[in-house]
Length: 247
Image (tube, rainbow, N blue to C red):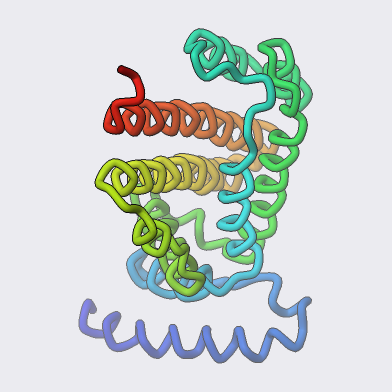
């Protein structure tokens, strides 16, 4: 049986790719990529890896990661660790998009609405994706993580993030360490926020609880953003210490 699956896998991938090319001429036909539920999850992951990395909505989600990452929290005092903690606590008690915006504003952040709207954009893109890739419901969290990470890596490879080019402009080890640390912060943010989306997609597909899943996604991205700010603040402190600016 396993030998048969290994033989069928590349054939199915080719068929899917050919089907995707043909479907590009008809948006209506391209709305769903349904695979036989009798296939193993490994084969489904192999097929979806290729399709997801080329899917317009998935690529938009990856680009949104950068947009959200680059939005500075207007009103944040980087020296006030309690402010970030209070924002995080307020977000965990929020049940709606409006309450999330309020959680930011009550803790001194003036552009919370901009952030939450970007979070909502991710939720909307997710809904499009799970309609096109219904076999996601067969995958467990570990398999969804594998699918997301490999598909994301494929998208980034094609777009070349340029981190190495920035690192090459550094003239000392402190600068290179800072660039690498900030890059690690971004990758961590992308993983946390991205996986919040795809693990919540299982809930959305199985329970049909759009409100509950959307809340989990919004909170997951919000928490990832706060953790990213902490991470970058630490990178700045390390850089200043390395350069002896604190003395």
